[in-house]
Structures are given as structure tokens and as C-alpha cells.
Amino acid sequence: MEGITEAARAETWVVDLVGRCNALIADPAYPAAARAIATNFLALGDADKALGSVFKDAGRYITAMSVALLHGAGGLTLPRLKEICAASGFLSSGRARTLVQFLLHLGYIEAVPVRGNLVSYMPTPAFFAAWRSHVRAGLDAAARVEPRLTGLIARLDDARVLEVFLQIQGQGLHALARVTDQTSIIQQLFLHRYGGMQILWTLLAAGDDDMFPSDRPIKIMLGPTARRFDVSHVHIRRLLTDAIAADLLSSDTRGTVMFRPGTRDFLQFQYAAQLIALIDSGMATLDAI
Image 1 (tube, one colour):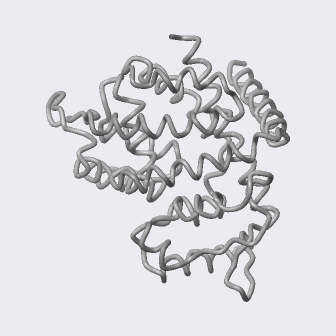
Image 2 (spheres, one colour; image 1 turned 45 degrees about the vertical axis):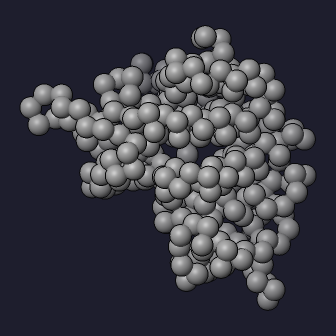
Image 3 (cartoon, rainbow, N blue to C red; image 1 turned 90 degrees about the horizontal axis):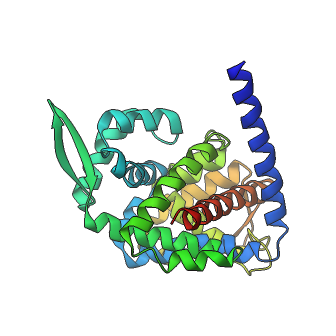
């Protein structure tokens, strides 16, 4: 009976989320808010190359997010990260150790012995400074549809406020992960390939704030884009070619690409869900503090 109750509760939550996403997409403020997620994160990566390297793919990002969410619960350990890998579907458990080494190299975590051979990895001040900027960028986008969040943005320098937000956000992201299609070709092409998230944000940042994602041709300049994200021309061209072959994008002889209608629908929903998660976490934080 408990399993049925839990399943019914989850189904109700999903139905409610779909309704809220559809309502948000119809809001005139939605295109600017959703586009701001992409533009804000791109600007962060340009200003902070270490954080930009975290944005390179979903595995790096999920690992950094795990550091943020677990610091108040004893820190990140390899066994915990492997559990997160298995649960999220966004990275393999075999990559866990490599990603921990990556964050150690950035100076974002430090090892703290726990017992026996077990080590806990705790975030450093450098990590908190970078992640605070990341949280602020996301909330800045969400504040375009929920202006009350500006009050929270102003208080993020308070470590206690940031910690409360991260704990609440972690619960919401766990729920959101249950309805995210991790096998989608969009996820596979853009979130898992090196620099793919940043290339997708570049496409999403294009266009005017009357439509998100843009329904107009988008010009990708290979040279500047390759230098910006530290990838090769060939890498970008191959990613775009694969996206066109998968019918995610269309192209023309002028060297521009366009989102296909189905791709636009998917991304509209995904970014509406991201905004709702930010709004819910932010408002709950304001209530809590």
C-alpha cells in the first residue's frame, strides 16, 4: 500500500509540474528568464575559467553540485559519489575517482580523513565563492518571473543563507531528476560531450526575448566559439553535424542552424522546469530564514 501511495504521490507531482511548466512557458516574461540562464552561465564561464571547466559536461557539473549539497552532511566521499552516479544517470560510477581528482586540481575540494581508508572531500573557500556566483546567476534569471527572489540574491553572501538554499535545492533537484529523460538524444549529444553544455547555451542565448528557444536561424562562428570554450573547430562541427543527423537541428547553405520544433518543445519544458526548481527553492529559503 505504501508503494502505491508513493507512486500516486509522484504521479500527482509530475502532473502538477507539467501544468506549472505550461503556465510558465505562456508567461510573457518566460523567454527572457530562460534565456538569462544560458547567458548568465556563459558569462560566468568566461569570467572564471575554473568554473567554466566545471560547465564542460554533465559529469563535472553533477560532481560539483554534489559537493555543494553534501558539505553539510559530512562531505563527499567516493562511495557517495558512485551512488549519485548510479541514481542520476548523468555519469558513470567508474568516472567518479577521476572527477574527484579534477576538483582537487581546481582547488575546489580538500581531502579530510574520516576513518580507515575512507576520505571525505570538503569544499574550499574557492569553491564556495564560485558556487555562490553560480547560484546568484540562476536566481537572477528566475527573478525575472518571480521578483521576490531579489531579496534572497542580496543575502547570498551570508554563508548560512547559502547553505539553507543549497540544502533545499538538493531536495528539489532529486525530485526533478526523476522526471528528466537522461536517455534523450539531446542530453546525450549536448550534456555529455566536452563543451557540449556551453555550445547548447550559445544556441539558447541567441535570438530575441520574444521566443525561447529561438525559432530563427542561428549563426555559429567556429573560430571564436572554439577559442571561447577551448575546443577544436572539428569538435564543434562534428557535434552540430550529429545534432543535424539526429533531427535536433536543421541547417542551410549560409552556415546557420535552427532548432527543430520537437527540440524547441523539449528545451522549453526543461528550462521551465529549471526555473520552477529555482523559484521553489528560493521561496522556501526565504521562508526558512
